[in-house]
Image 1 (cartoon, rainbow, N blue to C red):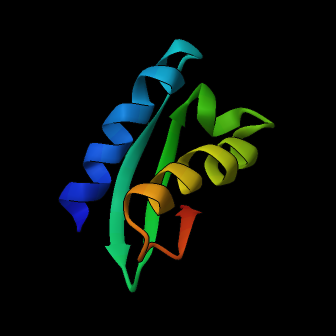
Image 2: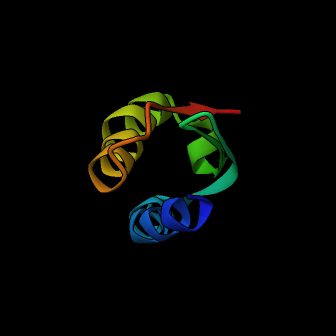
Image 3: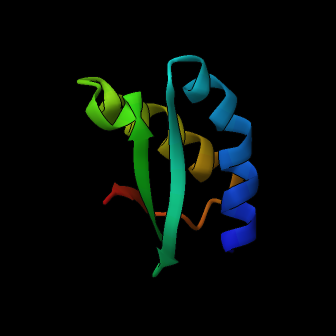
Amino acid sequence: MKEQVEQVLDKIRPMLMMDGGNIELVDVKDDQVFVHLVGACGTCPSSMMTLKMGVERALKEAIPTIKEVVAV
């Protein structure tokens, strides 16, 4: 499943990089995806909205078994 998650994140990364940020996959465990927001995304006040409305939604669409995306 990690490989599938990475493929989805690869599609999202260019948008994050345009704003000076990025996302790193930390782990996938029990249908939860753990990520680390870096660069501008790590300090942006909108990062949780980006995480939930952007990243989590894209992952759930592509991999329906994903329950949640958690920033660590």
